[in-house]
Image 1 (cartoon, rainbow, N blue to C red):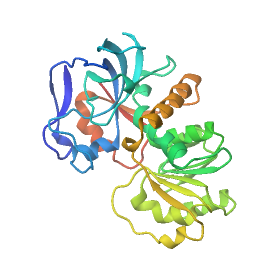
Image 2: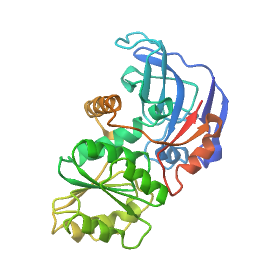
Image 3: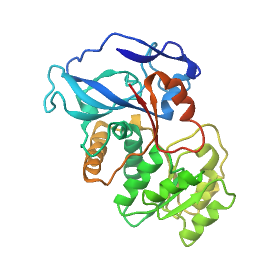
Image 4: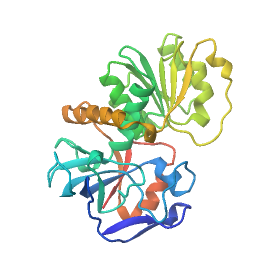
Length: 321
């Protein structure tokens, strides 16, 4: 089969498109014929060798994908050949390929209303958003959430999940196209985070009280602003960060606010099972609608790794095997 492999950590050009042996499922695994593959920023950090957990070389990147089950390994029950599934596996599990073998626990049924490309946009973005909102922030219906950087895949997932949970949603984006996208997916208020006074608009929308929850996509730029804006007893959840930052920690004291980091790979099996049970239901009933901003051939994975880090995020980038 064709796959993208990394033989040495480095820039995007270390992603090589090559022939590899077809995988075969072991005990408890399934073989999935892939129709679409999701690209996540974390995969660029791993490829560059700048992440806490690095795979052995060479490796095939990726964990998000969509396809049909082609073969069942020994000991697998409850799944059938030909079944349409989305894959939510660890991020270096080998989804940048035409086929992949994963644990049966990493595949989830995908409703027919969801396209192949949309199915590849579920795993990391929606599980991250669910964990941020409900397992880390303990968000409640009636609270206000500010999704700071809402036009990307995790941001749109956060907007949709928060709205479905009965929260008031404020989202920000850096382009008119991104702002229109955030509004179309249910945000009550959309801010242009390229404007110098956009945090004043957030304060105005919340009556000066601030949001109870902030889901932060770029903490190295925004965290100190978040601490100034958050409500009393509020929770800032850090989903994304690309460098060091300086904050005034005193801002947390008078409000008893908190900053909580998260990484999806820290979630327990029970937390992941709970998240994906909710996501499967939301995809089936129409509450959740993943946005695909761009599709590229699998051979252009290097271009996808450059694009996914550029400003002006718009949904998910998907590779097509």
